[in-house]
Length: 283
Image 1 (cartoon, rainbow, N blue to C red):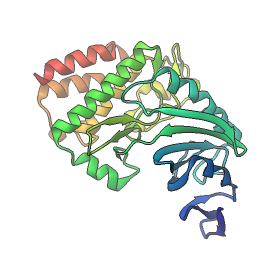
Image 2: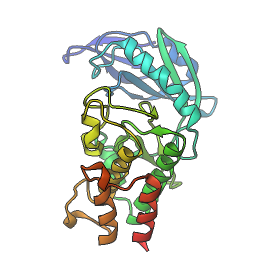
Image 3: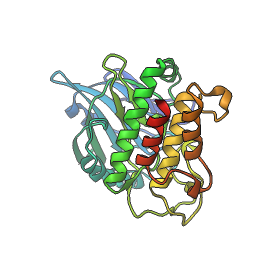
């Protein structure tokens, strides 16, 4: 059962299996028990989703649910539900060793839930300060492996005809025990051809190309070349683009700097080309 309690932040504080979380208003999460016992709740999302770590019969799952009055979401629950439903084909079509595994998806509890196999790891995202700090203290060799894995997945994404929208540091998990990199969120990826139909698109400004702010602009693989360049600066330049912050040699800096050019024609024409230049620069 979920206990409801008024809280001074203007919403409610609930708990499930002893784990507290916050919402704008009360919501019945009794249905979550079918996925097992809750051991973790992620309630600080602006996408309209709330997520649960659960354990059932010795297996752990990551349950993403849309339809609840999430505290940081300013839109309508039905829009969050529609977006989450629309992401199901993405996880099925882009199955990859570095992508979180979709187990099930269904209407439930007045909303929609997606169930994934649980992945251990710390998130690179700055919204989780302790995990982020641990991630950024990884040896350079480990961060190079993370970047290689990200490049591999985004190159695969492009080959499958998709563009990575809303890919940023919060999309990357790293398991310190196994060294595995996992991309944990592709909800807003789109099939090409794709144009900017929003103005400012979903995503973190540090990882977004200029065209992701321009209504009607093409959003394509060259856009994602910018994304991988920004990811390189996040991993090896502490998010900055000053040469003094860069941990690798000048050839790698030049490859990453080219990728984040404002003018699209100056960037590498594909992620595959970026990867070739990057690997040569590392030699």
